[in-house]
Amino acid sequence: MTTASPSPFADADELTLLAGLRIRDERAFTRFESLYAAQIYGTARRMLRDDADAQDAVQDAFIGAYKSLASFDGRSKLSTWLTRIVINKCLMKLRSRRRSHEVAIETLLPTFKEDGHPTQWTSHWKPDTESDSRNQMAALVRTKIDELPDHYRIVLVLRDIQGLSTEETAQALEDTTNAVKVRLHRARQALRTLLDPHMQLLKSWDES
Amino acid sequence: MTTSPTNPTPDELTCRDVADFIMSYLDNELATSVQKSFSDHLAVCSSCVRYVEHYRRTIEMAKAAGKGIEDVAVPPSVLRAIREARSIAS
Image (cartoon, rainbow over the protein chains, first blue to last red):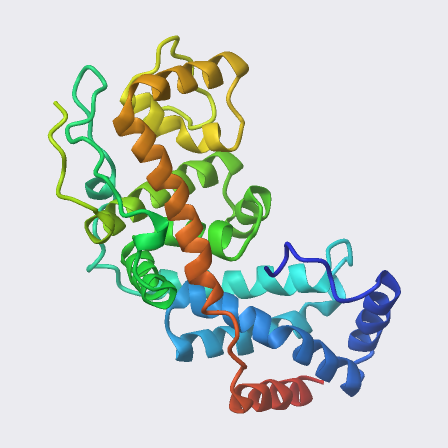
């Protein structure tokens, strides 16, 4: 994945590239863009679910990065820094969107009786081998991820799909690690609920 | 859920506790005694065994679904716009 994977550079190469960017060397800009444009485009597409918006975010991210090169302290990798910038651009776009169609997360979480027992027993899912084809399943899962409320979907995308650590996600979202964990957990539970009708081997078993 | 998913305290876990603390359980972040209570509950509750399995498969499916979105090149028009923007800025 993006920031979790090792940099394609040795440290010296990274420093050379950074030095080139700082003196506005045309070759350094071209190299920087060819190395990371596709990577951050993937991040933006997963976060925004809209190619045109994702392209805007990529463009804004590179321009934003070039404007703030002087303040980049070089303590993180260039790819990590650029990813953080594109995430922020995506978050700005998401905040500007209307969200009237979103379902409340509470309706997608499991419910329990006073004594802690579930109000509904967990269904039986098809084993892996009996699941629909990989591509069909991936398309279904993407559709269901899209149905999650933005506040939760973003964390699931950054952690489980983008591969950021809890700390990196908290930093990008300017939130605490504990809040990120709570949101990720609820997002996974909600996604399980959305997938459940498509995964069931049989209708709910009466085990009560 | 009002408790933190990382700080459970119950001696004997209920199905609700299992649902609340499952992430910490799978990440081995629970205290040893709570991790054992969690396993003890799973030994006698098939519904929670299935829930834990569903949760684990949901994570795997989300990861697999994300991989299909990655390999897309940025349209040349976007790269051109970036080049033009930086030449104006410099």
